[in-house]
Amino acid sequence: MGNEFINNPHISVDCVVFGFDGEKLKALLIERSIHEQNELYNDKKLPGSIILNQENLDDAASRVLTELTGLKNIYLRQFKSFGDPNRSSNPRDVYWLEETTKLKIGRIITVAYVALIKIDRKIVFTAENSTANWFDVTEISKMQLAFDHNKIIADALQHIRHQLTVEPNLLFELLSKKFTISQLRMLYDVINQCKSDVRNFQKKIAQMDYLIALDELEEGVPHRAARLYKYKR
Image (cartoon, rainbow, N blue to C red):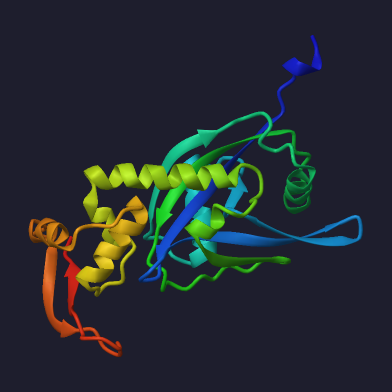
């Protein structure tokens, strides 16, 4: 039997964590410092982990998110698996993974999850030679991330666009507890890469009986203060 028939797979989970800062859709990336042949390389990747023994996939993804944010009540859904044999062909990616896991890594298959959080939630991630930071998704498309993480993020965005057609309330997982209609429209547009007609969007909003107008206006803005709203589950 030839070597091509030998299996040595590892299973991981990777989490695409989306947040909205009021203007831009962002994703959370881990920035790594890699020492390779006495040189220092900075690299970026999705939050993820090899699954532990006796740990199922959902529990592994929840663990990754809890370690990042300290929170457990986060929208988190599995959306796709990635198993191209060449997804770990970059020696630097494999080197970093072997250094952090202390495992000999052969082929690695990942199950991807998408998470939606309010960007004002504190990130509590701490790790040696690594930091967690938010990046604009339009800028991420121009970066070279580890493994196939660019593709995973692009597929996650497509997944969210589709889910919004059947679960429009997912938008409110990304908004702060109090928000303006303008912020809601901006979030809808940035996810769908479109520019909504204001009047048509207002009509759409009027049909949302779970959207509650507050007797409050936004504060500290250089323009006319807009009415604040909240989402009622």
